[in-house]
Length: 420
Image 1 (tube, one colour):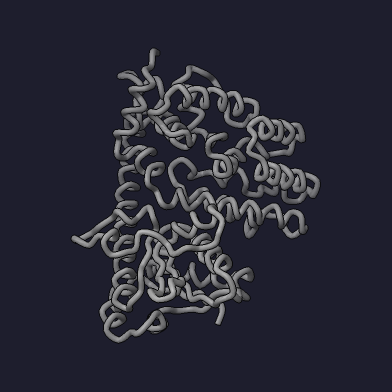
Image 2 (spheres, rainbow, N blue to C red; image 1 turned 180 degrees about the vertical axis):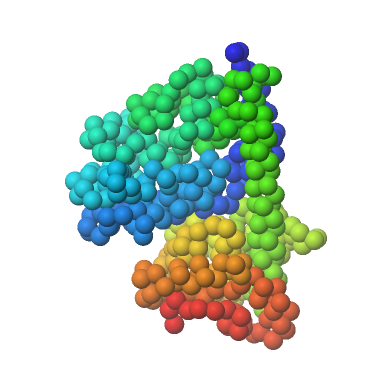
């Protein structure tokens, strides 16, 4: 089968329901995930060092890492499955075997501290040589979020797409075959420049869409990919529904940003919204015209500044240019990762005590309460953390603006308190 890959890439980029457009491009969840996952990996390493990692996936710091990854949907939907502890099979053997646990922690630590492809590949080969039962190249999905230009993600659909495009027979569970795939993917990605991003998530999304049958390589696609027409139609219908749901969620997210911005402005604050949301508008209301273009000067490193600039809404005192309070709107992403982003902000800003808020759909209230009860959040000294439900914000917006003098009016509608 002769394939014009540039034509396939163009088709992939033009398809509004492709992975490229629904996940890779302008997706705030994807952008926010990188730092959250990196911090989760750091916590995993620390817990292994302190011998507090535990003997199960559930409740571990690794579960948080994989939860953040699986939030990316589509490409990473089943990324956590290989890490679930399967007691009868004793796999993956990184929970009850202390030696294997330490080897896994050392591998993650080296991957965090190095950006040399040669060194990182040596570490993969070394990890593979330990023959840790059940610990295969599913780890590559973690590596992608640490080094997105060095490691592509890895799952069944991506392998299938790779085999179809490159007429190969690579298998899922082998590090060696993953590394061979990686070489081809990187070389192909370089040849496609500047048509596609250097971030390997873009080309991996193409492989995924080919692998699941969304993008046909020729007219005999059904026979080549081995997917029955009825099954393919169901898959495409499922993707369409997912895209519609995501658009609805994005719309709800934007409505909450607009409301929080309006309240903040009417209470006399400058308002900053996530940099990737500033161009958005709804019902004639544009965030760009309602908010300040940048945060006040903060003496922070670039990595932390970038994270803070992605927080959904921040209220800033006009006279002092100090951050007064901040809001994370959690429509479908991890409540835990939202809390961590706010905690990141408060710990970066110095000695003041801050009041921060999670804003979430009413249906997620039980989940929020469960997260606020986590031991890790019980004794936070740098901030008070409350939550506001979508319905409360909608119903109370005008009253908050009319009767409020400052952010404290929010306490009338906010619930919970992680630290007083």
